[in-house]
Image (tube, rainbow, N blue to C red; front, side, top):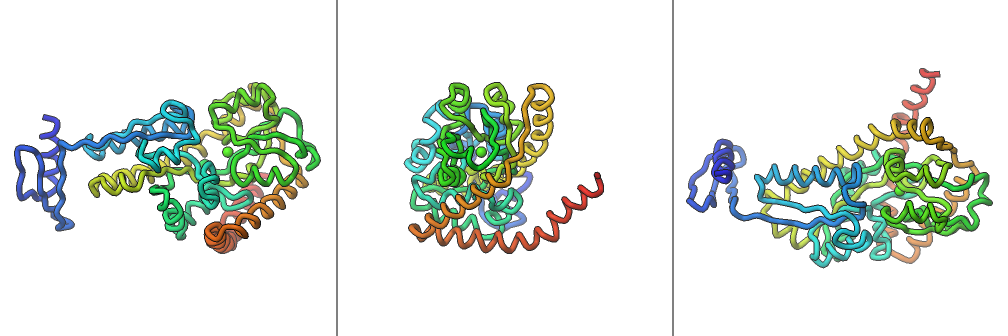
Length: 374
Ligand code: CA
């Protein structure tokens, strides 16, 4: 009966020329005049693997919502079961699992796959680079996505921007960081290009997945750790094991959260299901950034008031050393990899252009607001 109801509701929106008892209908849309063939008996079940701990706030939570949107919009034909990190495979095996078809879709951040293809990092975040709004503009509207698709195609993967955390926090430190000298010997969980910049400054970067972070910081396996921002850092409980909370998140000014699909299996789906999946991911993308922005300030205040967290700004000389380390790292990357060079050139051009616009839009606006409030 459910199938019949679904069929009748579709028929109300389209002019159907035939319907059979198997519910395979050939309908002619009154608006597009194109044939649509939908077999409501055919169900598709995908497995989604993620780099996040199971049911993780915002990230895992958003994916569960996305799966429901997709199921509803497809009248139950497309179902996606979400697995948190470690439930089906370890976090850092998502890329291979989806590439090879063991799972059909995954959620992560592209800097995790630097070992597969170095240029992947440019689609997550570049330290001291573009913020969330600018990254979205580059990837979605400025040609970035096309470059990203080209980069992932040889791995049989299709990337789709699936959210953004906004500017992150600089991380949790067990001891205060007073000058660039304190970076020497510092063992910090910090992924991507930021990690390489830290190494240039004399520290050691460790790429620890989220589900092992708290324990490593608690046991002193690492001296410092960056994760995301106040809301998630509160949920992870880092304030129990490190009291100094640094800003700004120089290393991740607006990282894109990626979703990627197995290319062959995505393209084998009926066209309407492909569109439903893409549309749901873009909805997730908007929801995710909004959720981060809505929650972060509340939890920052809560940690300072209730947990005695000490907020600290990175000293200028620390930021300068890290900025220098970032540029050296990128220069080395683009010198030895023509793909990285091509993508970084496009990134740089877009950043330069948008920065000029930002000078007379965002930057001036924030200053104007500050003046009004003081
Ligand atoms: Ca982070």
